[in-house]
Image 1 (cartoon, rainbow, N blue to C red):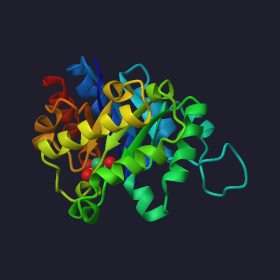
Image 2 (cartoon, rainbow, N blue to C red):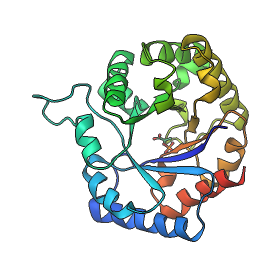
Image 3 (cartoon, rainbow, N blue to C red):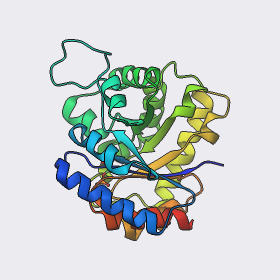
Length: 255
Ligand code: PEP
């Protein structure tokens, strides 16, 4: 049985005092109505990881970072290593988010290096994949997914896949208000599982948690989460407010 996961990607939002307020409010909601089957992860900016870690101590909320560098240490001004992330108390790291691919030109090769290094440092990975609008319109969605699995997850073993969550995030649905329909999401999620089984083997696709991301909100979460191959959501905009993020967690509890 795959566990439900709701993860929030705060992107470049929230100062430290704002971050503490948001997560303290979320904690209150979760203590009042504890989720029974949903793992909840928050991914604040690097600057807020330590204070958020402090604020969630003793709660069921888990902590993740939004990115990391592909080297262990060295002269890489402005970058953050997996060991630094671990030292804040974070257990997860998002890798390959479409905004990293778009604005920082991350490709499958750098993503693959980051995934290997994250796992080596005992961080669990939330690996983002997904096609752009042009790619979808040219019927290339499946080719893009195959490429992202083949190269982004190159030399990843079935054993290592236990520490990887996949997030299918169609780029055309991120921050645009356009959501994939539940059927569109289901179709790609089922395809991702099939490809993971083929490319990585040992039926890993059947076991791996696959989140949907792209304008998930309290109003559309239930329909998406009810799909058999949608195990949860990676939420951007709607996680910046505790109430709407908690409503999405509740939607996950109800399916
Ligand atoms: C994201 O950034 O991962 C995301 C899904 O954003 P939004 O929910 O705002 O589309």
